[in-house]
Length: 112
Length: 115
Image (cartoon, rainbow over all chains, first blue to last red; front, side):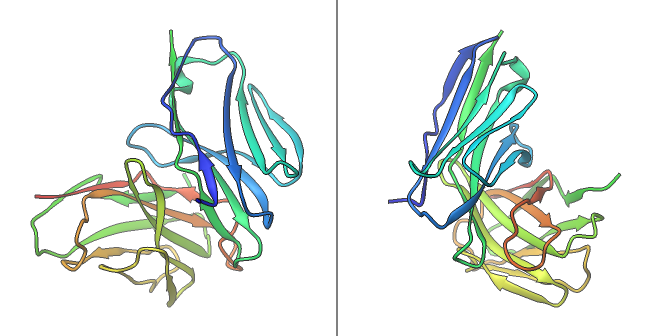
């Protein structure tokens, strides 16, 4: 079993839809959680960073962490075609030299 | 502008040749990383360096080598010993030298193709 599970998709939604992207993890030592966005043939860029259970909002993006269920989500409101990208979750294993563990990424297409 | 640059953007190599991928950052970050990305396999860590003149193997270091002679530079050599080098290579940096810190900033990547 992988430490981090992320459905690779692809996920296709119409413009304006609410998108929900999810990752589950198995190791309770994970303390810090990130979402990165990667456009095709580009490097990933950090979108959201959280370290506690609950929600964190930044514009149209909301990151949610549920440590009791070992589950994190990224919600995108009013999705736009420019949101079409691969979204990767990443988390820090504080018990293993703070190694960053990556999900495989979910491919999202927002159709105009 | 601060950031991470990688060159070249596309690189073609014949079998049996070594090639070196460049990574430079002007963010004054201590730590630097090399990943390779293959379809369906996500990001896999090749090497990382937390400080100048020091580096450690990641999860898939075989067939690769690195150096860290300057803080801003972390070149990756793909040797002929790497059996399947065709991939997208990403360099990243982070400000914290104490470990694989939380936030990593990525370059634009180099796509290597072995002919």
